[in-house]
Image (tube, rainbow, N blue to C red; front, side, top):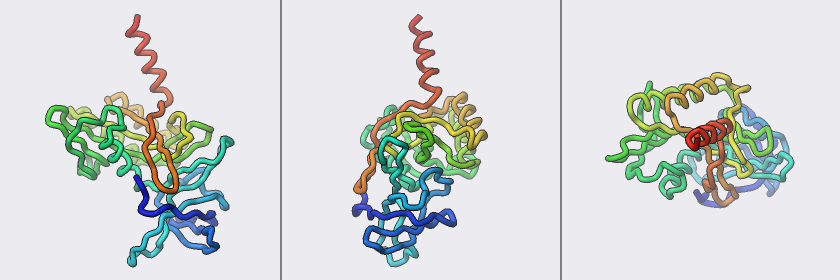
Length: 251
């Protein structure tokens, strides 16, 4: 996904009221940008951090700038981290169309924001006459507390837990359901759940997995010009289980 114009660089003054951030641009101008992220953004809101903003020319916008990325360094050098939670759905849809998400290709129809479950909307609904329906829920991942390990969620998310349980209901109804954790940072080597932050989400994740919901984690490659879905990364715990099943099958 290419930005219409390269992002603008600046330094974070402060994030406040959850959805706003003051940024001093490299030009010296200080602007207020929208912050399209409802989470706590642990480790990503330090004043003075290098941030990157997109700019809109819409006359109806109250704030022209949108906070898209921040540079974070856990001792391995700075990496760009995408914090805009409105980007992942389009990124995953684009990656599916390009055949970059293993197992999600071969569906001729892709629809977004389709009603399902209990007053919810699925992020992507894939449909095929022979394969049937595949419900795809997508979560943006940006938190990293240990070098190389991306984590979700960064705050309590009852809505996220509800989505997992509704995916499980789709599997029980005879459909396929997939949870995609899209990691908007290129330094992720694996993915794990932040069960200490939200035990309830961890329980819902386990219940959904037991019901047959498929779990995938993909990291992105980011620059001020574009974001690209790069490659899959292992999910903590699942790889051990898969290896154990493979060893048992080999006996």
